[in-house]
Image (cartoon, rainbow, N blue to C red):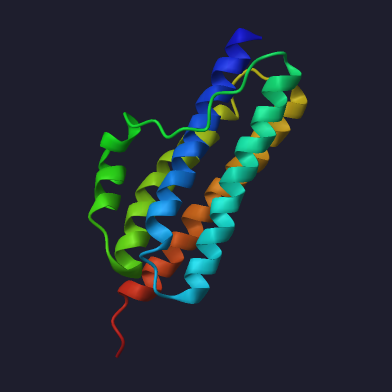
Amino acid sequence: MKEIAKNLSLLIQLDVDAVYSYDQVIKEVDDPVIRDQLNMYRRDHMRHIDELSRIMASLGETPIKRMPDFKGFLTPGFMTLLNLTGTEGALRGLESNEKVASKIYHDARSWYMPPEIKDLIEKHSNDEYEHVRYIQERLGVISTPIR
């Protein structure tokens, strides 16, 4: 159980840090459609935190505090976020962070977990994939010169 709780804590921290990233970035996005979508993805991360925290509690473990991990803010993606302005810059910073989250969730699918937890991690992994796909799609539209 301790190993499962440790792994769930890692995922919760990943989502807590993602929420913080979205908080920093959303205010830089001037396109209301993209801003609304990013707010929805922020809510996905909040849901991940809630669902994983409930599982930890059901295992008799105390979920981690919902505080950003400032060590994580030294990574290139977070450093990029600090210097961003505008929709394109905000999306570029989020793309880097969401790629990391997507990879970690993808890898988490192979961790030993009871089936109901594996199913939830699979669902969260799919959310992360969708976040990256949308951001990259929007960047392709923004970065393509108008002819």
